[in-house]
Length: 441
Image 1: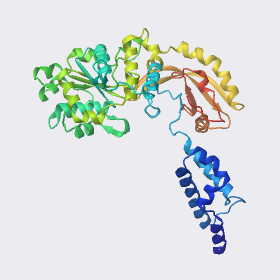
Image 2 (image 1 turned 30 degrees about the vertical axis):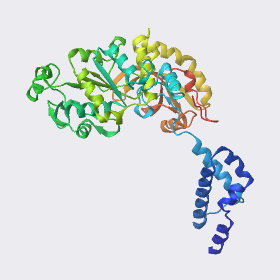
Image 3 (image 1 turned 120 degrees about the horizontal axis):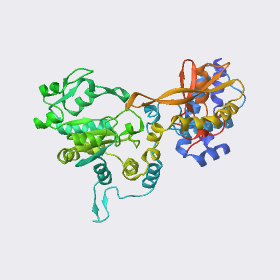
Image 4 (image 1 turned 45 degrees about the vertical axis):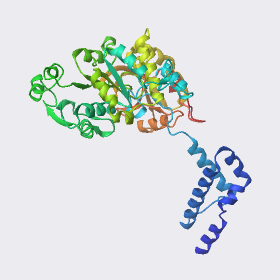
């Protein structure tokens, strides 16, 4: 056995032989020489370990052609993007694991425009000198919220961190126990407060906090004014319009909080607002100005792609005749059951044909969730396609749909696989492609 192992190891070609082989030409035409060299070394190392472990090989596996084929397959896999398009039929509209809000078309176009060329990110074209990075965002936010000033950072946790560090480093911050929540990725509000340098002072209970609780600790909005203490309110998701007009649960509107007297209001750009991930802060000029001068602001600032997408989204709120149709998040929230059912009618037989024998499909009633920490428990009536198979479990059916290109993600309930239609705008998205190259849009 030892002699056989030595002979097999001697059969392995060197990296130089592989790189000089005729079959390496197509690889070197697609990838850098350094990259191909690294992949050749990796494959040779794996083959050496396999030989030493006593594995058997087919004819040609240890020849240059066979080894280079392994290198090609590995390079092809690594060339595929890791972030791929998926179809969200889970019923969670703002799904954190799937990237939350879909950008409006105007925002996507803005990303392409600013990403593909130099832009006046921090350049004043009128004066011919350095300008302010967030100027366009601030102007729109002031119009939309009635605040005196505004700024933007890379997410809402960053906005909270920046606000707390600016207003309360080394000082006590009074917070209702009901607001000491955990947000995405197991981050907790008290932990963010600790990193900001603020000292947490809890008041009230987890389900109820009264004005007198704040009064005792010196606190909120009108109470804060009385005691000349700045009041900062984090809305988490934050809405620029009253979504209850569409029959949805009431969510705090940023402009309302400003009118109530909050000094700083923070909220997200990528939840109910329906734009890119960003943290927005609006409020009094004094406090926003201090936030902008905080050294943390530079560490937390947004790049041009985010600012371009955010400006386009905010402009829709400012100028659109029907913002609920132009922003995909709001469109998903406000679609009628009749509209969803009309789409489902012709889709069912098409999907049955695509899936083949053994599958049974039916249309059912269910509920979607808003999700993503915005209104996570709030539900909206929806229609679902129930997919069952006589010889497959619901888990196996779900796996089958995940194997499509692009993957189609649904949910399992009562041992049945469901495709929720509320966030599906193009019925073709639910016709699975089980072969060929993965679709990219």
